[in-house]
Length: 128
Image (cartoon, rainbow, N blue to C red):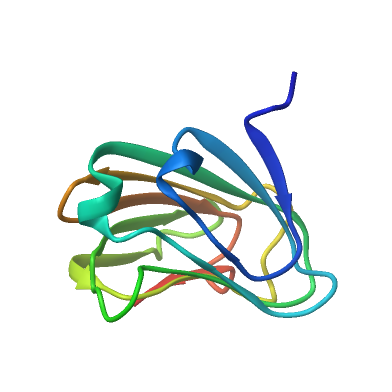
């Protein structure tokens, strides 16, 4: 059990073999970056989920290289304010103010990663 759940505490480059995993994010040790495979390498159907478990710093989720392949929306629970990226951008961030349970799911179509996130407050996540 738990083979598809991985705790991240430091910089990591994901591979095509990471599709389907849930990554818990522990930023108590400082900022780190998670790099996605290129959208073309990931291919249609590649997916993963990120969930904040322990807070304290910033975790940046970014496409490989100079790709700007993230498109999506972050819904905020406590207000009507959210954030969207309607065309490709290059960063999804879980900010230092993030709370346990803030999360985002990504699914790739071979060209872009579509992001759907939920946060407790509007200063917890950004997509830009």
